[in-house]
Length: 313
Image (cartoon, rainbow, N blue to C red; front, top):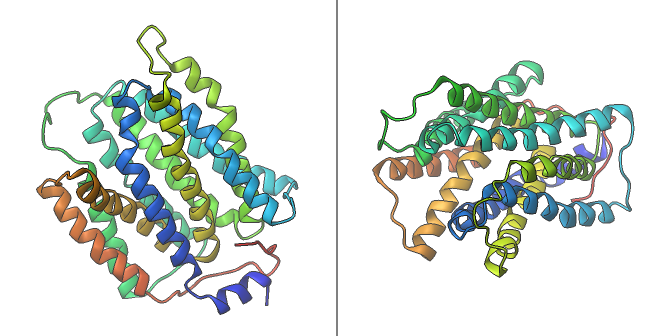
């Protein structure tokens, strides 16, 4: 039995701990990430700051493994694919938001787990029981409700932003699939390192997309506040890689994607005092039930490569 399989046997719900950590970190990130743009620091520059915040957790994770980085062709290819799909999708999202309404774009993008589930079911042979299946369905139903708004439905219906939204949805769905696939043959730390590298590679593109003719907040509540918020995103992403390492993609993907906005809504209610609308409340209820079902679902059909490399966690 491989080291990873032994680890799974000893800690059968390790994936759930990492997924929950992702939900909490992304929940706090989601609750406060909008502050940067509201206070005059544009989203394109927020991306640049985010790419830098990926460096500390990437180096910390590698240090824990003795600085062992998978450098073979397959690992390099998988790592770059994962990184480029994630960072590239973010770049496309920036452009889509200049063309269409966010209240329609984000619900479309939130359905990326559909792509991950379909690919994992067909290509990886992942399966779950009826409890897990019910949780997946409820999570997918809840996702669009978190960002959907009925206001202005007749505005901005342009084919361009719709296609771009589908591209982002597909990119992030495929990214999650490759995250699981790569975890079979390379360390989670190496995966995250390549995600960090590709994020930095695309940072100049975000910089060039910035409109410097408009006032930009360069004060402490500009880039420094953004860094404090975006590091939550970065660490959450590392936790997600570990969640995919030890859990099925068909369960981890919908749980993390539905659980994060659930946490955001709870945190916003407690800290900011923002009461969600009726649709979001429905989404909260569905996501809560889905989270419980996915957490209780037995891990069936998980296939682990016996030649996989061990990873620290």
